[in-house]
Length: 305
Image (cartoon, rainbow, N blue to C red):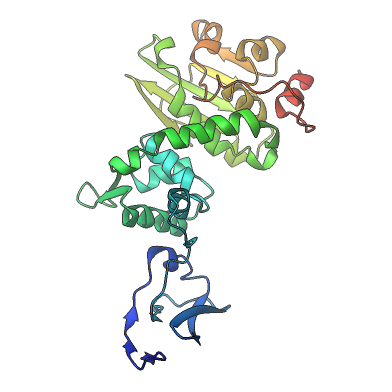
């Protein structure tokens, strides 16, 4: 128990979700600074916490991410301006409700970090966790969470308009591309009852080279291993080209004609590839004509053709 200047004793204060983000990385220790009122500052010891350890702080402590302002922008940023948080919200808004679904849409996030962000959204009132739904439960947006849709969509539109030139090889993650493709396939252009599509990326290592989409009765499943169905159509290209097609920077019919995308298999599916090929909801967002002074990734695709 620590005692402040006034002589009154302060009990332990449980960590907020934001403060818990430091658990498992660094140990927090309170340091009292007396200047007429009781305050707490943090000092850090670069030692991982054991799984059974907990952190207790004493005194009156504000949120670890607080900007100390009542401005609504500041209050919103305390929730949103955190690594991975807008991406987690994107996946929830796009319909993912289970933990593993969320992970497939964010393949580079660790399970611990995803769990942490979800707990923060629950604590903030943006998400409800229904543990009774099935093992692991389901995460569903509340009204406050659903109100984030126009914000996330405007963020995406701004990124499409102004940040497109920042795309590098580091952004071209094939598992995310295929998850996005499975989500945005144009099913109305597929008249066959069931279609199996094989995507091949010859330039990738073996475990990232082949991906199967199975479209059946309006549902699309993404498979990482060969399914038990014959392949109806095969799309062979590189990840960058398909990503630029998805983002609307490269016309799929033009890429097919030029050979940067090779489509083989059932004639009707080959002929209509440009119609059923997935497109991002931001693909129609126009970009400024002015040069940014940086290389446009779509131009390198066109040059290779």
